[in-house]
View 1 (spheres, rainbow, N blue to C red):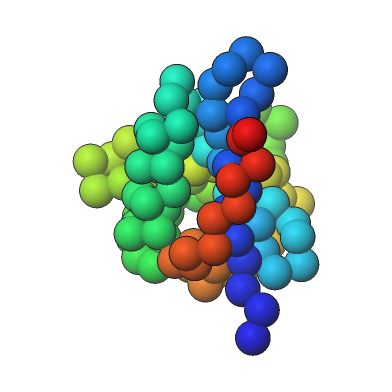
View 2 (view 1 turned 180 degrees about the vertical axis):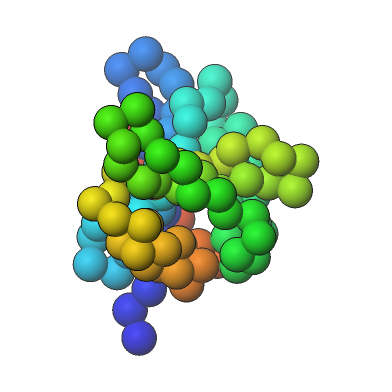
Length: 112
């Protein structure tokens, strides 16, 4: 069964960022920017740890009335944000995809 993977990248400003992608290549969770690669790798580890737990997700409504969700660590810090969805049910499906794909250990380092 195909599973998702993480892509770790370095932005033009020298900071690091990762995306969790589903098996179809769609981005299902995006991180904040991190000052160091090690911090971004710790963020991935936190997603791997917290994503299997539905209680760690929070559905929110954007300023343009679109639902999205965040994944929070046990300390309530946001460790990842979803895209905007067309409906609450679509956002909930996105959460299920992160629950399924988040624990993957497939990390593709594209930061070099």
